[in-house]
Image (cartoon, rainbow, N blue to C red; front, side, top):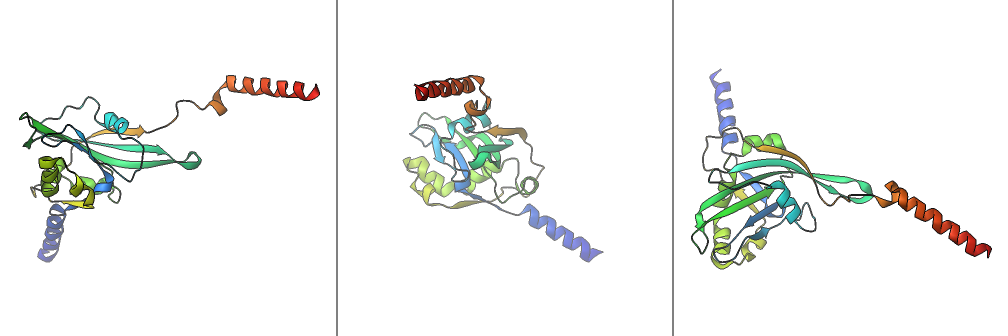
Length: 215
């Protein structure tokens, strides 16, 4: 019995001490340096889309960062070839970071959207703490500090991933708001298949063509 209990305890400790690897080409990170305004300092290659502001605004709509990090989960739906859509699950975090101040002395707001490909949401609940965003900033201190001081994100571009080291082994259940699906770039209407006016125009063109041919 003691042997079994010891194995369970070791496994539990390993789970609580597990670190999470976040690939920067799966991360949308909006922040700022001391002297330059807010910008996307990393953006995902996967998923690959043209323009991240609509997604960012949808995720963080009406979200004002505070000193306690808040978490959001959801799914980005991206239209693909042959009318097939791709789905990308994400977890987002937003908070005020008192460790970094802008040139006016205001604490910097951090926004993170991580498309956790390779990690199932059930794993995320076990591996991430509520303050995982702060742990991420702390774990990436060397490269972020370089950007913060100089507004140069070349080190961020060169880095492939950040291993997030948890600040506390006391892991509580991850608290989050689920915002469901966000659809990116879907056309509002399909003229060819749904618009009666389009069909009428086609009929008129055909009749005109037939009239020209007969004449």
